[in-house]
Length: 282
Image 1 (cartoon, helix red, strand yellow):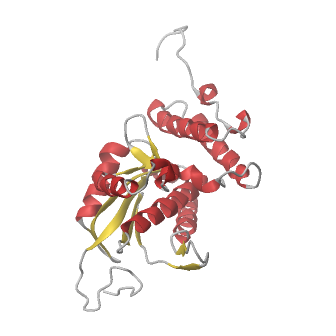
Image 2 (cartoon, helix red, strand yellow; image 1 turned 120 degrees about the vertical axis):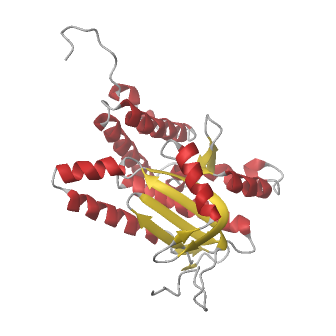
């Protein structure tokens, strides 16, 4: 069995061993149904090409880390695994866990945004625990926790923090005099059900920047969500998933007073209301 020595889980003796890691488990919303539909419509290869391109572009965002003082880029060792509609990302933690988590929040937020802009909405969870990844195996307690959180708690197209990640996050936030001073204040949000999730739109808008090219990306995000709302107007379960994204999008826009109302989504216009029975029911 061949093994990439650049993989951070590589061991010189060839014996697999878990490493304590920041673990991300995610899946692509509705991808199984989309794949079935693609086969029915004889366009499976086109869907595969689209997914392959989106993942390649997104994974490129995991290859580099910015040094905050010198502002230069250097390669960062991550491990990734994709199977069907599932994505697993592992980053072995260093002595500075806070920096590792901050980096994961930033880069995974970029990945989520990149996939979303390609039309693939992501639901997932982040945990801290043991992990091992190679070309053939994904294994570890951290993977189990991230999977369970994604499956049982994430619900909507959001990447939430599993309990272990929340514990580490709270420990780091406690080092700041005020939570507002912490980097987590901008990149994490609390949802109405109490779940903490990545504020991925924060990655596309410069802080305090009142004009500029990144606003175009926000409009593109709006158009993609509106298209999903329109396409799934007859499927209330899936429609509600994208309605959640619309609410998040509008909340984000509302945080920046200089953004015009045209940046927001009027998702009510995509909702179909009940009607009176005017003919026999089929």
